[in-house]
Image: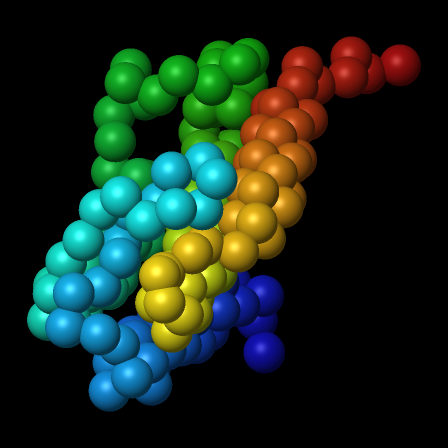
Length: 168
């Protein structure tokens, strides 16, 4: 299997899991569902069960749109591309590889973001199974791991587009 398909597989599995978890918890959720929590985990924003399902579908739709649009990046004129060492990376012999890298990198960032949103969504759904709803402090760790992963993804991007080495 080509590694090019891995982000697609990851995205589709995550999208199915994201919506599936809502379907799983939906019958057990109260009529008034806590959907926003303060930093201490106390609920301070509410929605209906239908609103929660709608929110899950909207999140998937937005993530899918970003994921799919990554394939259109190669159509962007070179003048509009802002990468370090642009003359080198946008040269005709590297242009396709450059856009392929950015496409795949963008898709992995979407997968990373959807993983985080799915985990937070799961924590929020589980919080609604208690009375009163209270978000588990795990959200702090999830946010910290997500932040570290985003920094790592940015480092990958920066390292990839560093100045090419001069021939010896």
